[in-house]
Image 1 (cartoon, rainbow, N blue to C red):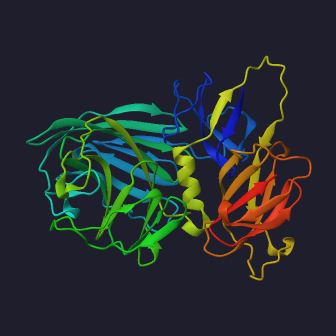
Image 2: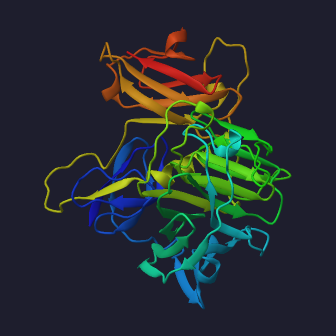
Image 3: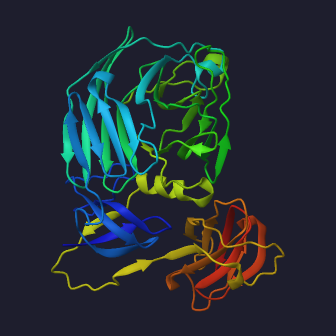
Length: 452
């Protein structure tokens, strides 16, 4: 059967797509399954557009996923990575092999281990950041029997529940571990809640000390060095507001990467990555404004990636993988009896790097073709004048790069005038094209194009 695949991203996408048989808006969270549980593989869906695609479970050139049960462990393998989760280790990740890497050793010593802290802080800051209590909570962990909820060549998912008891709470935390064919990362969904005055962290321990990390920001990326901070002797670290991805390094070498959509606080302590997954801080320590409690149950999604094949943040690859992880394309089956014949594929706008020799510009700098992805982060009609269209372009490199933009005629009149600025408020008036295909130089991380 055929399906109509929609790609919400500004770059072509191949891989997981989510089937929706009822035409409803899909969940934009990293769960590659639908109301009927069907996940399919799609190939080269055009950016900001659609493509008619044959619905297939898995193409022949993609290695199927295998699940092996060995003792009290489950081993996931898709030819790119091999992950092991173990009941006697409280359903943590006890091994993660990079099958395309040069080493046969696990890239982690222990992964997705939960740690609980009494958090006497406030809704703005952890207790250890405010000279308030942040002591370790002693817990008893009881791993419960697992459940294999999906086992197909396309995707394998095992649900593992951990019963956690302390002197102040007793509750279940459920982890769903998923490996998808063709993906170099291991997906995790954590379901649970934080009791009052509790912060819940997931931790990942590595064999080597982490000397630097790179992470996404709201509109770019940054790198940091681990720095101890706080008044809690056994918990001194600096947490960063992390968007999309977190990449730890040892002496300049990438040792892993983490993708997420809603786990903003990440930190490093020696050889361990900490991520705050759940928090309930009703206190008003240090009198920092409002206070409140949240004991609701949440699903938290994140993934750990093997290092082979991962390029630098300046190329845009980590951002692209993270975005397609937590917002996959959707595919709606097409009625085979329909008489409608729309175009087989469509793209609202396409953006790529281009050689400087193809660009005419009055600027004196010398940008070059970069092996970097470019992103359209915003495309909208004018609020006051609907005949205008604004496109915002993100260049992840910190150097100028030639840009080629092609947009559909629906966005502009027959002979549009396209101008570029570093921001709408800083219009340079530089005309870069008078057709639906324009080239220009992106000198900064962000540039805004006006089509009218």
